[in-house]
Every structure is written in C-alpha cells, then in structure tokens.
Image 1 (cartoon, one colour):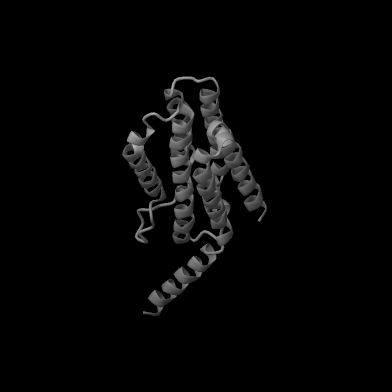
Image 2: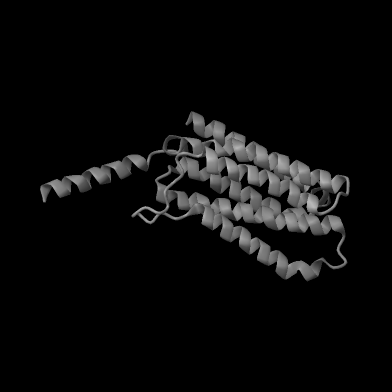
Length: 207
C-alpha cells in the first residue's frame, strides 16, 4: 500500500514539473514548427498575392496553399520525433483533429454563403473567402492555446497562441471591408504571420 502511495506521489511531482515546462523543453522538434510554418505561410501568402496582382486563375490560390501546407505536413510526418501522444491513458485532446474540425467548418460556411458572391467583384469575393480562412486559423490558435493546458505547457507559451488568434480574428474581420486589404490582404497576413511566428520562437527560446 505504501509503495503504491509513493508511486502516486512521484506521479504528482512529475506532473507539477511538467506544468512549468515550455514547448521547447517538452517537444523540441514541435517547437521548430514556429519557424517552419512561419516560412511556409509567408510563401503561400505571397503566392496568393501574385495570383491577385497578375489576375491569374483562381486555382492558383489552392495550388499555392495546398502545395506548401503539404510540405509542412510531410515535415511533421517525417521530422517530428516527439509528437504529443493523444492516445494515452490520460485521454489528451488531439489538437490536429481540432484544427481539421475548424477548417471543415470554414468550408461549410463558404458553401453556405457562396450564393452571396454572385455579382460581386473578383477581388471582393476572393478577399472574403480568404478572410474566412484567416478567421479559422485564428480560432484554431485560440482553441489550441487552451488545449495545450492538457499537455502541461506553461502559460507563457500558450499566450503566444492567444495573441496570434486575436490578431488573426481582427484581421479577418477587416479584410473584406478595407480597400487596400482586399488587394493586399494576402501579403499583410503573410508578413504578420511570419513576424508572429519568428517573434514567438525567439522570445520563447530565450525564456
């Protein structure tokens, strides 16, 4: 009985230690995703910006984002050795599933409002679609920041997700209504996302 009690005490102490850890300490290869996706999203945004500026076919957006996000997914599948285990006895939440659910809902929203795009200029329509996805990323960041509590990630790391989620939701809300952002919203998002990702990496690496 005493031996079992000691095991429980050790487990409680271990959880307390984990509670003070950042992503870099717990999941080093996951921590690098700040830089990986910071670069990939910036490049994908540049691709979409070129589609708008040069009036290229609409599928250029999907090609730009699809190919580069596939690169990110491949990197995670091959280069991540310390992926959080969501299938353990602790019943941790599966964050990728949450991301997929959020983006699935974004697709549903676009399907619902698609009839409203009839007669709307191409720039307004594409910027509105982009704003919906930017909002989805922001929502996913806010949810992920909260779910990271279950992985004993310190508050400082989670706050970077909260900050990112807030500015993305704000940007999503103004993109379709501000003329310059209707045209340059892709570049604005790419620059802001890249700066946020690199800034978060540098700040948290030094913390």
